[in-house]
Length: 386
Ligand SMILES: [Fe+2]
Image (cartoon, rainbow, N blue to C red):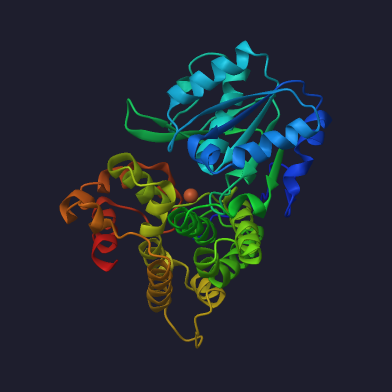
């Protein structure tokens, strides 16, 4: 039986388009802020993207400091360090620039400014809603995480070997496709499949809703039409724009329904194998779809059609799941997603992550119960089939 969550909430306005970053300074002023902290990682800095953002602040004479210490799967220590710095400098506006890690760090720093104690207090297994007040502006530089349009801050707690989260108020998302043209090929592929997984998992959680289906289906259509082109021709601004829009829509799709066993598996891969978030999501997506398909045949038919797969209308849910999984694996091969086995882990090591997958709260949003035996089956299939 489906559980509906009729709420569809979009956390903040989205400004989309080439050159959109130019509005940053005026928007900061619109929030009556005097001192910005721009938060990013060294990769974004090296690609020259962080400078485009600080140039936009310079153009409007906005005062800012920068923090470039973000790392993948940002741990609580990074948030506490950036938070302390923000507090010392009287920062009253946070700008996260990057993929999920930098944007999630910016959200979590808002928690620190709300309550300047170690952020561990708020990064818990059942995510709390934290009533933060510092404006958070999110600038996406990948076409993937959709973090710019969700309230979720996902932060690692290395002492527990888990990734937990909190919900935070955000103020504005800026999606400027021109900021994505320097994204390396592997990141284009991994983050593009992450966006696909947001759309497809959102459409198939127990909390799916009609708005999410609309955004999810449209995002999958765009991703299947444009990811290979954006990967082959990094400077093709049309393909980059379509991917940036698709990733944003996929983010909107999963803000309420969240995701399920695919992301639960990806979390286990990143905690134990240190795969990037997008890479893990890509690896898990085909089997996540095959797993839920018998419970949601009509939704799987919609996903198949959005992917451009011919369906007759008489296929079973199981058959549709297999067709969708095959189609995703084909896309993964075309953009050279690295197989799990190439990372040097044995099948047994992969299956040993089943306990993590079952315990992950995301698995409770799956329309098919994720038991230990089923998680072992999914993990084994992920290893065997790609
Ligand atoms: Fe994701």
